[in-house]
Image (cartoon, rainbow, N blue to C red):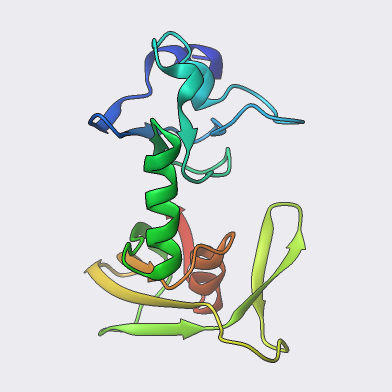
Length: 175
């Protein structure tokens, strides 16, 4: 089945109220259709909704990744979330399936992030100054070479969670 069919039929709504809409973004779909965006987008699949033109993305997820994607229905709702994220009153949480050996107990990674190619980021061990992006990790389930991890970043830097996990030799295989 091609991505256009998936974009039209299989983007389930996870939660919706008067202010917000959250959908499950399948891997392979981008969140937005702007500029040089490639391929189908989740927002394109929501085009048949009466309020489609007013949906405001709260964040973006790379097309190769899956996850819950949030939209605000008004600028006031969007501003509320962005202020909450900035102030720390709203704390983002990500759950990922990782490949690698995860140590038992809570862990924390504090390190700057740098680009290392197109859509690839890594920990920058040479960065100096300022507060570092931090990700708190909690193992929800562990196997021989895989684990389910709850990740709580202190910021929403692009690829922060993925780069911090990779610095611990944990490769994200599902999120």
